[in-house]
Structure formats: C-alpha cells, structure tokens
Amino acid sequence: MVDVTKKTETDTDAPALRRRTSAFQFLLEVRREWSKVTWPTWKETYLTTIMVGVMVVLTMIFFFFVDSILAYGERLLIGAA
Image 1 (cartoon, rainbow, N blue to C red):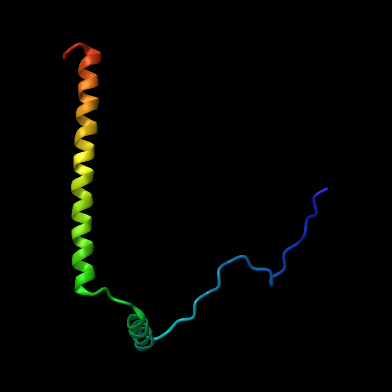
Image 2 (image 1 turned 135 degrees about the vertical axis):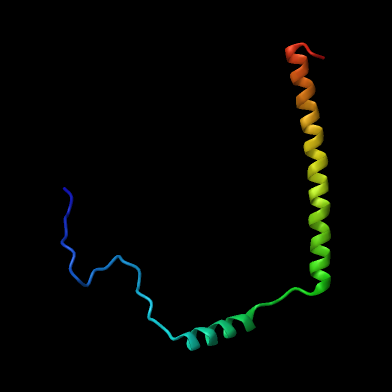
C-alpha cells in the first residue's frame, strides 16, 4: 500500500526566498564579482577570433561539397542529369 503523509507548514518544497538588498549593496556585490572575472588577453582574443574564422571557412567548404553531392544525386534520381 501507498503511505500517505500529511505535509506540515515546516515542509516546504518552494525555493528559498531571497532577501531584498539596497541598490548600493547590489552595486557593491556586482563590483566584487566583477573583480573575480579573469579576462582574456588581446592575444588570446585575437587567436580565438582567427580560429573561429578558420572553422567557419572549413564548415562552409564541407557543406558546399555535401550539398553539391546531394544535389547531383537528386538530379540523377529525377533523371535531369
């Protein structure tokens, strides 16, 4: 049999409520978190940008050939080749 228990007011499944803070306290916390961020150097940013460009070009070439092969196969199927 299934055991059924009655929930009391102390049993809560709701997420914890956040306490309100002032705008000044919020800005202080933002500044504290901002200082923890590790920013990339310009060299890292530059190299990452170049790598993204290279991957985009390689992906374009790959899909161009796949699309060409599929289009040729379609033309063979319908007898237009």
